[in-house]
Length: 477
Ligand code: NAP
Ligand code: MG
Picture (cartoon, rainbow, N blue to C red):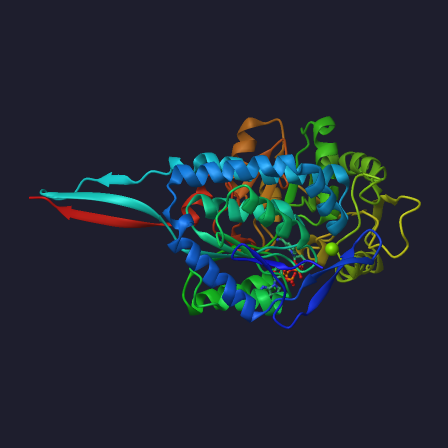
């Protein structure tokens, strides 16, 4: 049984309640975590507040950066162990889990090395005054993260918060709390002072809701569904405190007739199959110019049919989905598309020998999908790709922008002017030209437009989100 990490100490829930930890590969319970509640959230916020008043709050930016760099190294030193934890908890292939841990370390290295490079400014003002703009921490930051990339998400949201001198309270997803708990322990051993990072496990509607509504927090970062993101923003608005939301997408791969298909095909397949499609940046819409539609979709189908699904140890293209609810959701979309007569162009295969009670689903390519169909507009969060034809550039842009989301987009064409025009016209927080960066890119500012959320994570912009300014005006005559 895993306890929570609060104020540098392990703590069980006040009422000793626990939640089972289930392995998606087999459906079996292999551990339990604590089911915290409002009481533990309160303790964690107080521990964070004390950290700000204690050794953590007194550290210089250089010292904070050094601690973060040490955490990055410690993560690398424990990479095998962390990858095992992550693969078992999420069901993802071992290679993917190992990559996730490398990215986790990169977040601590990137923000650790940036901590003392965020400078203030001097502002020219009326005579006799000196004006400086200071960058300061927000205070206690709350972080509510999902189950798709649990370890990476800790790095993505917590590392910049710590770099700027905040103290964090983290609520991992109830399905995947193990890596966050171990990372907090590793960070403490690497020198992170007590209370700088607190992990409270439990249910979203208990721990998550209590955290978002806690009067002692100064900021909340949320990644997950639109429904819960709206609740979190409402709770933040009541304080009111700033909130950054990352809420998913329906990202288009826009393939023009002149695209380099040898390059595009494997990347497009990977961008939807990766992590069993449970990636907010999954390239889930394949938009293809009419004149090459059959050819492109034919080649994608060929590659798609070779996709293999298996256990983490089998280490194939992808693993099971996260939980029974997610399995039912993905199957519901697949069944609805089949029942409405949309052709199945290809299916991946589930490897022989996977446990029967695991949460496996066949990756499926549908096309042509009608523009008003759910599969063309809604986030499935599973390995389901919807192909749609378009006529010309204007039609491609209109189609790309026709969902409520706006997270990522990719443009596949050899025409440089068209690359620029389309990239500027699509509504997305990131646009890739002849490549696709689902999930990666610690250095690259990331976030949504439209219903995909607001605020920016990753890159140096995250440091602005996780800090505030103070304008200091001094009269010297
Ligand atoms: P979710 O409910 O939005 O969960 C995200 C996080 O919010 C988890 O830590 C969750 O805790 C917490 N949470 C749940 N209810 C809360 C509440 N009332 N107040 C505060 N926090 C709360 O997402 P999900 O149920 O895991 O997945 C549902 C769908 O969301 C997926 O099918 C997918 O479409 C989408 N999704 C998107 C992303 C993304 O990266 N954009 C990631 C995951 C899921 P618990 O885990 O304990 O409930
Ligand atoms: Mg699990």
